[in-house]
Length: 544
Image (tube, rainbow, N blue to C red):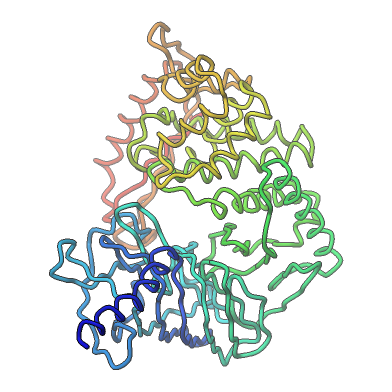
């Protein structure tokens, strides 16, 4: 009897182990209670259907206070857990937790894990916060805005070995918010009321927007908290849908899902931005939002930003990019596609204006070749490298290989199987798209490896800049510059400890670029000796 019992047990368990190994999309189930007036979260969530990871973390927002972490099987006691200080790839909002073990990896991952925790956040109605950002859990008095990636308001599994996040989950959630009129969670339609019972079998990150605001539906697309009337929204939806059809046709990858456009205000005075968390596109700011579409002065800029976020469906949702050049690929190609949409839908003059503006911004950065990037710190300036230099680089490569091969390259970037989307992967897809080893070698040397890669990009695009890299065989040339210097306290401006502000007169000098840099350092050295701001002082050297 004993022998028979063992055989039956193994047969019964084997299919369960097999399906578990194949299905690696986590499932989140449980209850969430929030209050937009009090700024509170209370969560009782079970994470199941996880990949069998040995080197893992659970990322959870640092403002959440954990009651317990348990194996979700019935009648289990709370587990010991530890916080790791080695989660260097987290964006800072979250803490990394794991359950310790005596195994070789030192970590134990139950098949199902129950998290019970609460959090309380400031409700800021007077814009008194010093800043606002994507990963902030933001209560502005009338609504809650929280993204499903950086904020980590729910436990996000992370594979530290392969640098893979599992923020996209299936879910079965009961959300209660007694001071809300609308509750929206990524992957479900907005619910009017104070209780939302939401389920999704399609993996989503759990971006949430809830509170007291209007919900409008046009052609099966939702607009939450819009500042435009229905007539404007209808025209806007038609325009944005045409961009989606354009990208779908060119990339030969379906544009899936019902887009939800969200407009809200920040909890600070000066922050303003858009971000995408598909199917949601969120506009955060005090200036006009969706009604910018009918304003001739702001229309083109607004549509360009929207085109960038729409492009993130492909470079960000169809595929997320990891490794040290992940930001450069994701943001660079989203901006490249936005520029293509600007040219093909809004005209070449606006496209050329955008091109020149990017070149102008690059006066503050000499980008290193892509091949030399070993960490994100090598960008020197992430925004300039990813949003300005990268699309210029891709446009130069497109000019060399042609539009057909450029679309083929992007398709390969999105489809070619790879665990790490690093420089090796980047090169492999370009080589495959070009299809000619000799031509690829020339492209690689010119745009990815050469110390003069930025100069090569500018020359290919017929753009001029005053910061072109000087090759070893060229003599540095002197030119006339006008400059002024501005310095202020780093923070706490106007206090007794931080009250010194300096602005020099506009001066003129004729010198080489290196001599200009030396002049800047000389001025800055004098300023540091003179200033006694306890928070330190900025050093803004402006030239034209």
